[in-house]
Image (tube, rainbow, N blue to C red; front, side, top):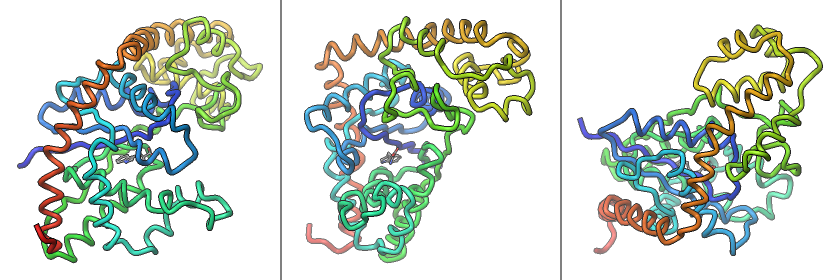
Length: 336
Ligand code: TRP
């Protein structure tokens, strides 16, 4: 059996928060720990970041900040190649090759495009429209076997499989493996601290809705103390919890940070006042996030060190990507 190749990316937007940490970073760290024989490639999708409004003078630092967050969360850089997507030009080259086997009809189904383009679809950029084709190239360029992503990216990975299939069929070779999505745990879906029905998001107007990975201990404590709850005590059963989104969210955050089940959180705090539970949650969040924030700050203060890690990752990525792109071109009949 050939070894597994695990590939994933995260868009280069700044201000990572607790939702990103519990929903992606922490699970990534765990995958890497548990798997000793895979090739891991993890990139910051900066080419994807420019498909929505962004600040040119923040882009490079966003890439560094995400890299710092992964390292600070415990990603083993001996096992994982971390790099900027834009540093590996083979991504965009393969994307172009793929545009010729991707019917418009497939792209028209993409829900993320529809959401982001909104009503004025004619004003949406070609970049936003072809975003999923670049994503397919991101994955297939390394002949990825597994792609860990959130539920919202499942459709894009399915499209990657279709593009791989279309290419293999068109050129009569079993060339690209069909990548398997590995869907990250739904239990780690973290909601806003002010509205338990909205996802925690960096774009929410109020900073009190989220815990940023750059927040200091006092800020974390304040935000948890002020988090919205209802007048009832902490729920002690699943039924009770399900009907109360803000309470459910705080229990979920506690259980993910402490790595214990939600039942055990409820058996400890169920029936108690929220003030007491929030105190314990704040202490726990500070204990878990404090070292990550400190490490991120340390890394961000020495950009040369992060850049060296990104360069090393890009060099490894290009070692794999180069031959795959060459073989793809050869199959397609290009001069070389
Ligand atoms: N589109 C993904 C997101 O929004 C990021 C991404 C880009 C990605 N390329 C990828 C994820 C390839 C997995 C594999 O989060």
